[in-house]
Image 1 (tube, rainbow, N blue to C red):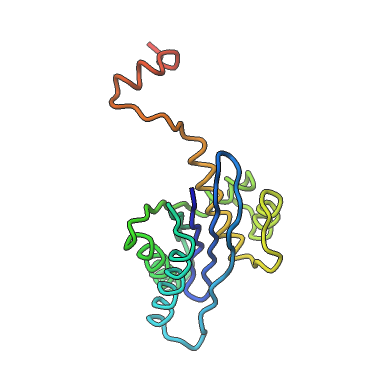
Image 2: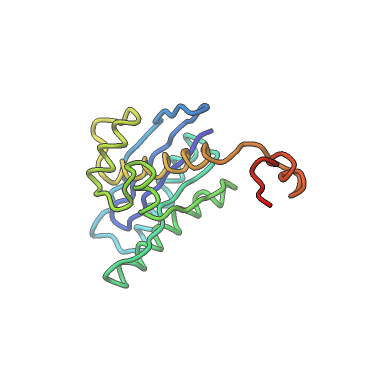
Length: 178
């Protein structure tokens, strides 16, 4: 399984591609897209779409995990952040790659155990979990944390699929109360 993790931003978008085999993860790439600060917002969105598209074409991920914007002090900044997230999401959706979104607190809790961890704490924990390129900045390690959060969530869910509720209940008889 190959997962694309994205930490969207209108000026800096972190991305990471992680390959999983069982419970082992390997970082295939991890970097940050830096947009030209003099470009208008529409141009930045196209650049996010095009550059993440090239990453997808190179690594062919099976799934995409995105950090979703939750809150902010400035409504205009939140709007721009939401648009950057949408550009990243469309890269995957236009290629029929399933997208899962995670809140910043979910991502931080998944890798550090603390939903209020700082970017530096996230980077430290991510580096203790997998081999990260030495020059990967905080946006890149945040994107890697998003991908790892997705992997950990997928591993926590039983891979067994049931046809219906009756089959689930039969397979989990010891868990049913009453």
